[in-house]
Length: 257
Image (cartoon, rainbow, N blue to C red; front, side, top):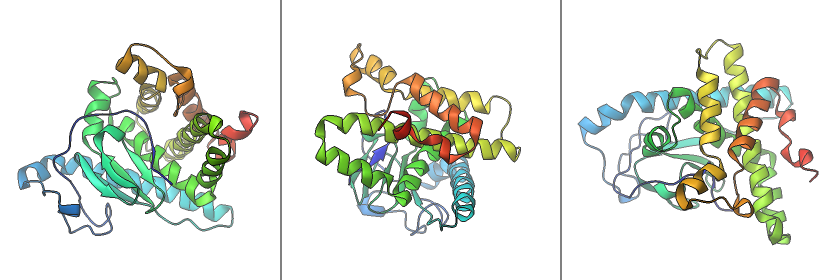
């Protein structure tokens, strides 16, 4: 199965960035796949974002581990790979043009740090919580993988190719809702600041298919949607945020599927 992503596309291929045992399973190796390691100056410049990404990763996964335990099941943690601007994954070469993505074959979340620059400049979604939303969304795909939802979608896409885009949208909107479920938990634990929710909603809207298509081509083709419109993405994030329950995130039931 191929990678599942948040949408969007940016820049070129030069350097990889991999930090710390909490972030990557082979944390000491800064030359993954033959990529060139960053200079000490570049590493120091990236370190605050890397530490923040690691904190969000741990917090989101702890939230889901508690939820799975409460449901009588076990949660298998995902690994996060941070890079600029291309790296190897079990789903193929990850490049900036793909945006952040989750690979179910190696159960890793791949985040190109340059995407966050683009999220701020091109899509008008700045702020730490906008970045946290991206991490939570991709980990939402990991939850779907553990639950078998992604496999269900893959079968539908193979058996009914005409529904491929439709079920892809439902999968992405559910990941947005799962990100909202984590945000609800963070809010209850007083980890959110004033304006954080607006940043999350802004980020969800910013990567809507309609906004990306409008910027890229000057027009919107609803039939080509794979992630959902700006309105849909914000609505499903907000649904998870308001309820705090993964049961509120059944996009497939809501669509009648």
